[in-house]
Image (cartoon, rainbow, N blue to C red; front, side, top):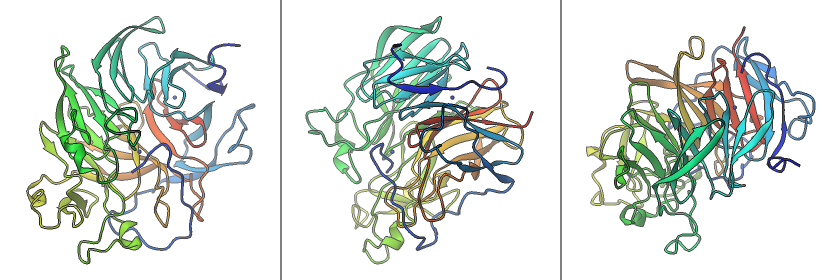
Length: 429
């Protein structure tokens, strides 16, 4: 039996040319609608049509043992392209293969249209973030970031870019670490950026840890010491380089925040606050966690004082912090983030793709989807739904997207660690 058989249940052919507060352990919390979202408007979903997801022969294991309906741009198609256990982030290799991380098995899989899949890397510690800079593959594990030389479909010459990163095995954390999975991106200057999530919801001691947690870290080109690039980033799992070379993060903000007017933790307030941040990072930028929370939206959000952690405003002057550029609704749980330029037809020709995992603790569950943010003149427009329909009106779900990346064939490949699937979203023609 091939080495990849235990990890990859089934791979299908590809028609045409040429694939966490949201934690991986969180479960959906179905329930009837109770309150409206007032923290950030719902994403725009105009021009979408409901379609039945195409399921090739042999891929009809649950949840595809029954027809599944999704919302996608009118005239586009959505197909199950592969089935594999708990796929997370993805990146296209220079040779046209799709690499997918599987933290639960410690593997990085290599997928190729019509040719199945194989294990590219094995025995890793919760590999998550993947990115390329030329022929160099960067992999973010829970405790390290490594670089590999990628040649002839193989990854070799492993070298450590950053080591000793915190995860659940770190002695000082004693197994308590809610956001161990890390993401990685490489800037046009060769600098390597990676996320270190917070230990928990409001674990302020993360800010003084070594290395500091709740950060986006930077290692300059050439491999010198890592340093904090942005702080107060509770869990910046979404991490990507924009077309202009700027660094962006999509953040899972905190849970169970108190109403600043009353100081009480009320479910109707918690459901809608705070929005999830989508921010452009600059050296030394502070996003405020756990002392300040974004408020308002969808764009140009102010940061307001957290009355539980910063009651008198002495811990941090929230009003002095730069406003947050963009947002998603509270508890959306953005995960993978990527930019696409020129691969997709208008109006999706230039923008950010974000996998929205959906809430785990909201009374009226925030629906999973793939979101699109238009990129024009160096700024991101408001959130739009690119793919929806993963959640039924009663709050039950059949899928939870993690990441979306545009492929060399002009389609979008979407990982889903809830449905154990990789989808291919294709435009007409």
